[in-house]
Image (tube, rainbow, N blue to C red; front, top):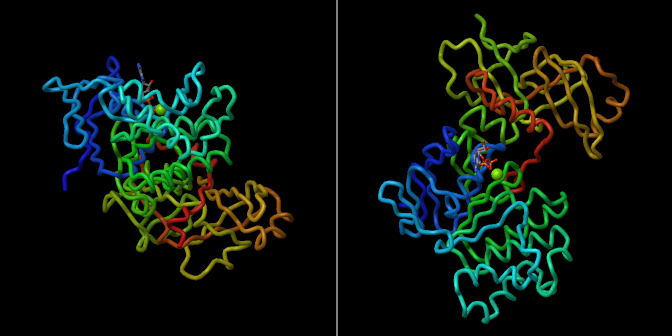
Length: 393
Ligand SMILES: Nc1ncnc2c1ncn2[C@@H]1O[C@H](COP(=O)(O)OP(=O)(O)O)[C@@H](O)[C@H]1O
Ligand SMILES: [Mg+2]
């Protein structure tokens, strides 16, 4: 099946800096596509190319089978003639215009005179629960209200494509969940096609029909959330979607071992791209998949067991976030407070403990010194992601 929307071979450079690097992105009609990647990987630039706010040096873009940009033949439909809605991180409402005028702005720019009068503005405001705010100015709204107005503005002209550039990043945690859920429901109701940019894996899993993980201007993996979650194609992707634990593996004459010397059987792990005779590999593991034990003897049969020492533990209500060290590896896990609270409170940093995991939870990749992965795992470390609801059942 050919996609109704497609981006192919897209190249955008600033001077010598190639920011979007021969990018292909087929998008199905009605699909909610999430572009996920760290800061600086080219997400915003890609959106701006789609919107017609940047002129790429190469490639082509078509919407509903109509070519709207083609570097070779010089086709370049101007931004205001592309039927695209945009929602920005900074809300970007006009401060001197009322909510009504802000929401109506895209209709005015596109000279949709009928829609300005037929109740489209009120309807868009109602969709985001802002119909009571139509005569206010943006300065009289909370951040969450401003972003909901921005969402209404992005949808009011019933665009072919709606682009979201990290629209939840400036909201506090509670509002972020609310607006996210509202965007999800609106997509279910209205069925617009969306490209949603974020660096937040939980947003990507919650919203995406498909997720494209971006690395340095290219797509590293493009797949359904469940596939990305279970089978990340590279260590970069694994680290970015919450497999923040990295265990270095060394192959000796009797199989793989950690730097601490514990044996790791990889026969049930997902191993990708590690050469047959390779002697080093990097295993990735979610904090949720790592169990804490007072001693190695307590680990369930069949689990890989690592000797470790306690580094730190932080109370989180129902759980503790526990940091341990095993050889060269620092690992994070989430331990149930009911099960481990009493023992942990009697423990001190440096205590010898054990951790274990089911070997099928491991994702193993070639050991590459890749700066991008290090940056990612730093950020991933701060977020122990819960299993998305969709996948938990
Ligand atoms: N107008 C511009 N001029 C020069 N460099 C730019 C411009 N816009 C973005 N860049 C560079 O392009 C790279 C990607 O930026 P961006 O697309 O904003 O990334 P992201 O949205 O993923 O954080 C960055 O290195 C940024 O500095
Ligand atoms: Mg950006």
